[in-house]
Image (cartoon, rainbow, N blue to C red):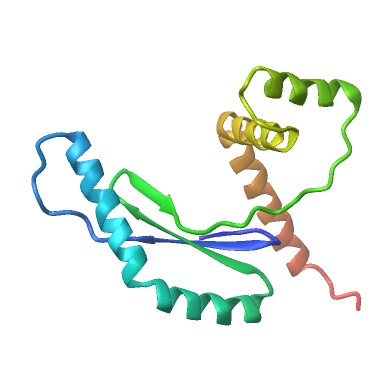
Length: 145
């Protein structure tokens, strides 16, 4: 499960396939098929749970499933993010658009954020751990209210 201030993403782990497959492509296709069937079979229950959870937690609920090496997100939120960029930063986005890497500045920014996230995973994980430690220390401190 992943949580941010806008969305809760729940990815269910499906039971492993027990069949033998001729190659990795056949296994991947079988995994995708099982995930698709799970998506259809659980649609009504997921909608009901999402409605209740969204009301309770004040965030949208998104769904996905994982099986073997295949993960698929069924629904996700696309949340606009307000930002102010200076000309050099806009030029980077425009270069990505002009090169055909992205169709718009918005898509170029999303691409850049994903790229940084992939290459900074270790650093971001350490930062999140440090933030959790700070939060834990704050909760142990005196109540000043």
